[in-house]
Amino acid sequence: MHAVLGRSFRGAILGVGLASVLILPALAAQNVNPIPDFSGVWWRNAMDPELPPSGPKPLVNLMRHDNDPHPNGGGDPLPLVGDYNNPNLKPKAAEAVKKAGELSASGRINPDPSNQCAPFSPPYIFTIQLGVQMLQEKDEIVMLYPQDDQVRRVRLNAGHPKKVTPSAMGDSVGHYEGDTLVIDTVGVKLGPVTMVDRYGTPQSEALHLTERYRLIDAADAKEAMERHQRRAGPAGAAPFDPNYGGLQLQYTVEDPNVFTMPWSAQITYRRTMLPWAEQVCAENIVEYWPGMNIGVPKAGKPDF
Amino acid sequence: MFNVRLTWPVAPLVAAAQFLLVTASARDAEVPDLSGLWGRQSLDWEPPATGPGPVVNTKLRANGMRDSDTRVGDYNNPMLTPFAAAEVKRHGDISLKGETFPNPANQCQPQASPFLLTQLEMELLQQKDEVVLLYMIDHQVRHVRLNQKHPAHVVPSWSGDSVGHYEGDTLVVDTIGVKVGPFSMVDQYGTPYTGALHVVERYRLIDGQSARDAEQRNEKLSGSAMGRFADFENNGKGLQIQFTVEDPGSFKSPWSAVVTYLHGREWLEFICAESPYDYVTGKNPQIPTANKPDF
Image (cartoon, rainbow over all chains, first blue to last red; front, side, top):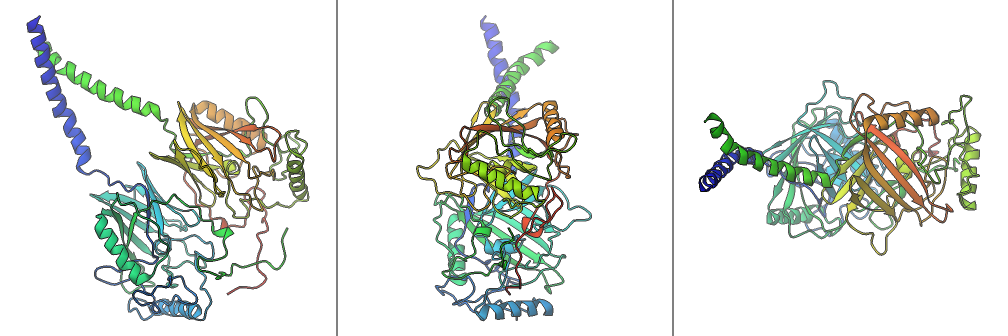
């Protein structure tokens, strides 16, 4: 009996050992490159992108200076006048930015996807939306943006079709590179108010966008957000969850019909403590800034 | 000898593997896997197995099928309060004139449950603390908080306040606090609701053949959408939603209906603002237009 028990015990030890040899490496292999956890609702309290550390930059507001307390919303008292002298703009694009800035400087509000309840195509969506929620599924990532329920879908580990049918959100494919989610987007459809940023910078159907998302340290996120908010102005005061770090989006825009060379920008989010809020464009014709009717077209008489 | 050498180490290994598998399957058994893209092409809802059902179309084609081009709800349904019956009749009268009456879908307005359950394609995404429901037309999104209660005071919103939990193989979603707007309705017949609306949806998987049968049966009764949203070639399970609607302002008693989805085909992007075309009637649903540009 002792012999049997002894053999059983030794067998068990051997078995567990073998199980360890066979199973643990398999589990460890799965964890060598764990998929970063981007779950939760991410938020920021300023619009526009942050400037990249180096290289060509996104357009900035010529009417803003650092620490200006006014929200960078457009209209009086702070028009949205993009830097149409940015050497990266091709002549026609510079002209469009200048025209949009003149309209805004005259006290009118330039029609854009936000105030026209149109789809927020990328990369415009990054510049205006304050929040994002990423649903990381096995074969896709669904990205939800709070203002007007904008949704993007990213097919994981897939290629773009040979012929992409242009759509408002474009064709997005993605993959993980270590701790980073990389998304590649082409085929963004052009609508009457489609633009790259809040300054009316146009885009063409040749637009190619690359996004890179990764988690960053909480202190770095806080510092980046505060620096950006001083430059770009405040837009809300959502409380952040101190138990989480930040999410950094670094994106690069290429469009040879609009820009002389690719440029990059950055956006930093932190986990918000606010619940997901419903914002329906169609029922709101007043912008966030007091008394500014954004001029949604109205019918002369009721149709019904 | 050969057997002994293999058997002794293998027995505990098998036990260890079984332990891991049993633990994994026990965990999986707790939450049914309802995630995925779901589609259907039959118009209207299916009647419940028993009890009061939804308002149905009284306008029939010569072949007995409901006329999906003309939506005249049964305003004599005894379940309707006088207010609701008058609204159903008013909308039916517009439809009888050959016009498309405004509803949340053709007015690019937010769609609340149960009107949302008329959509032909949806995606259900199960997260740890919530279920997210995405609907094809105009990026409608619902967030269902899991294992939580409604707040004591719900601020009305277009999606309402939805909480959910799993009961065995079923996801139960409870919604209150749905905002009422100018085009608010529970169905495609203009049946109204009030701030007292309470909807309970029960989602569960059913076998594929039953789902296909239900979808085809309903298609013969109520008509078919022109698009092919459901994948009839997929032999996987179907998703059945059984839902119950209560609203003493509109209904004298609760009523129920059933919606069956099959696996969906490719997700299509429908932006309401860029399409004034009503794909059901083939007519322009008269989106208001400005006399002159504002800019």
